[in-house]
Length: 234
Image (tube, rainbow, N blue to C red; front, top):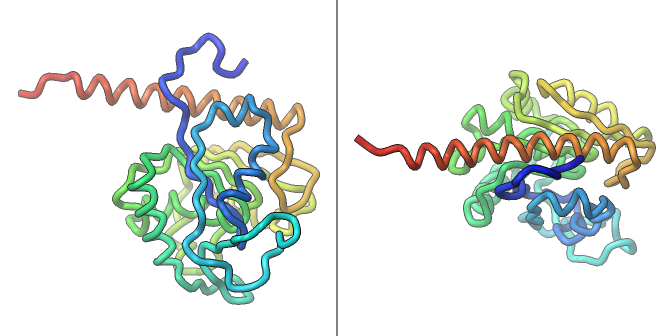
């Protein structure tokens, strides 16, 4: 039923983190495969990663440049370069463009989005911005840097999460591991590979129910905040 019959104060606001060597504009195109009935219920902000791509992009010939990357890594994905600078950049943009309720990430952006709630809770990242309440992970995985992973996933994450798992996605086994780090994950299975999938009838139901839930939570939080502001100070 979506939000019919309810007065929504505002749309849940999400910062969207694109895939490796793509861009915010490309992710905007990818996400708009989803029905208008979904997109129109979210306040989406699309951000370019801080670093121009340092090699060939897999989307050359499909999407126009420029292309960007969030951080760099070795062949085993266990050592990262510029990760701290990436966190500083994200915090700066979240201060200037926020506040945000949550993150939507695809591929490298999903790996970041899935790890940030735990890093924030441990005091390692995003200490100057409000708590990340929701994440939507598309084609994601865990951070493989041992030091980061120890902090990001050391305790079960209570952040509300929606995960998209592609049947033929090369990251599917790692996306499954990420799901296990969250306390109450909602999962959409789709038959495609490493992509932002279109929503069939079943996945649309799951996504709509997730948005129903987060809309209510945002509304309740805003209402509680207003009531707190109305209380007289002694």
